[in-house]
Amino acid sequence: MNQDTDTQHPDPNHPLAGRIALVAGATRGAGRALAVELGRAGATVYVTGRTTREQVSEVGRATETIEETAELVTAAGGTGIAVPTDHLDEDRVRALVDRIERDHARLDILVNDLWGGEHLIAGSVFGKKSWETPLADGLRVLELGVRSHVITAALALPLLVRSDAPLHVEVTDGTARSNRRYRENLYYDLAKNAPIRIAFGLGQELEEYGGTAIAVTPGFLRSEQMLTHFGVTEDNWREAIAQEPAFAIAESPHYLARAVAALAADPDRAARWNGKSTSSGELAKVYGVRDVDGSRPDAWAYFEDVVYGGKDAAPDDYR
Image 1 (cartoon, rainbow, N blue to C red):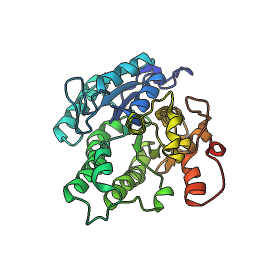
Image 2: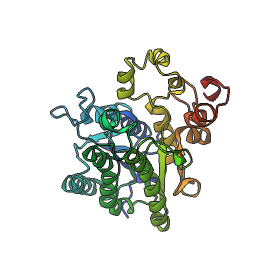
Image 3: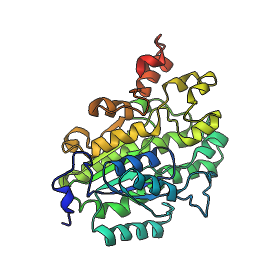
Image 4: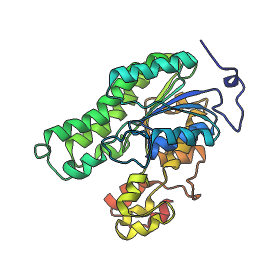
């Protein structure tokens, strides 16, 4: 087993020093923040995505690139390495894994944050019955949200299990509990429940290696795309509440990312989390994490109690 010396005596200010991470799907949103916070904790982070300074993916946003994410990781104190990768291309994923193996001979943390289907959801999926959804769009949702995760896990796990404490993180929308409610469209429902089952199944397979597989979800995420949708910025995001009252419970991408970084540094994480699904709000309570504004929002509890349950309570009661 190849281990860096730093993993033997962790720096309390950089508990992930010497650790090697891959954040698949780190161009923007939660993926970018996850890469940055793992880097802030000291990790070397390989960051992947389809949008580069030379090429824009089907998402259509040239304003965030994978190179910029790597630079942010390094600026935060880690080592960011950008590897443009389409995770539906098996050869590209194999080349990515081969590179990490050549560089470090192992992988300690794999974060599967692959998605990129918002343009399909908004345009042709939400609000439609499965048979009304254009089949090509529905299948693309499954390609982006399920097949990409399976390809990446299948090809990266042989390297991950070389770690002394493998950590596999599946990022999705919703927990096992919250997703008992139908997610408005069959294809989207399948895409967002699949990572939860992937984490459950991989938890069984990683147990003998001392590993942890977990599915995590942010709450109402103030991603770059969501801010653009409402015509606001991170500085004035509360102005969007007039358009969408539930946005009052919104959280920054760094909230989930800080919680996952704390989980990654937890030596007891396997006993606590292996095979489970959880949310940024739950992780934040366990690890004492707060969002960038000092709050500790629990969006899923708010939606369960207030939006769906009819409880008379304000969003601030859940922050």
